[in-house]
Length: 305
Ligand SMILES: [Fe+2]
Ligand SMILES: [Fe+2]
Image 1 (cartoon, helix red, strand yellow):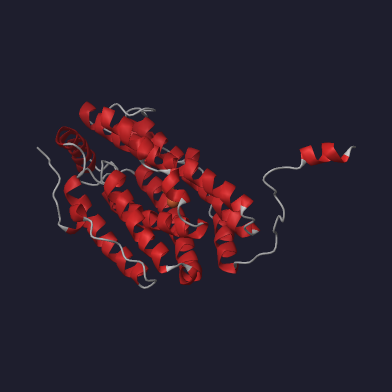
Image 2: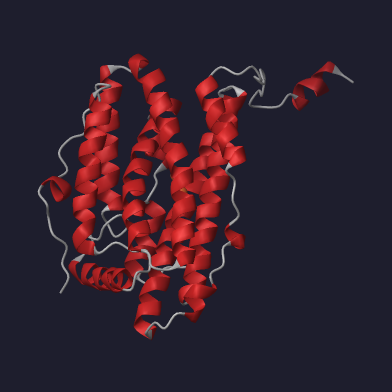
């Protein structure tokens, strides 16, 4: 073959070196746990939800609620896919790529369990019915914001959100009165605990090397994402426009009152505040400061009527 032809065949970007030596034993430990603790959402029996004696409006509210959960879990898939590309082309060792692959598979099964629950309650909604959700879900993650951070710093910020959503999910697990929903929440929480563990490992290992400016940026990015998208009907309803806030809050309240694994809008802000304070303490130890977040810090109550 002519050398010029070979040049044309050179893959870009260069995949080498493809690193197989383990560099982070603690991350590899998480990968081993992920293999041992795999589960299958299709094997959960959702018939208790189909059989339940629930009014039509409660089924409607529960189906919307679990559809929203499914859309949110799905949001982690494109995010994870981008991180996998980053991990591959920044030549991360095997266990880092394996963790990201596990993360993607796990978020996909959280998505699956959620749409199966929605389906059994009253029908999964592949697109949000409310205009507001149709516009807010796609803006949940902004890859341009993500790319301003280094690979590990970005992963650490994501972990802070996993910690927050883990606290909310714990409350939703406690609210659930149906075995299928309790099982789904418990298994999702077990995966999330590993994702949070990963974040703690990288904070411990990499935060010492991050500059003061970058640390300030991490805190600001966290606050921006929390205010701009997650309080807009995702983690809580408090930043939704008033009409949509009332509608979404009523639906959540209804789902929570019937034990469908939802959080009551009046409880959500307290859970978020508690989790935020814990996160502030955790990252504070690494010199990262999360700026004030008025909606959370000032105990702003959602509109219910
Ligand atoms: Fe998840
Ligand atoms: Fe997760």
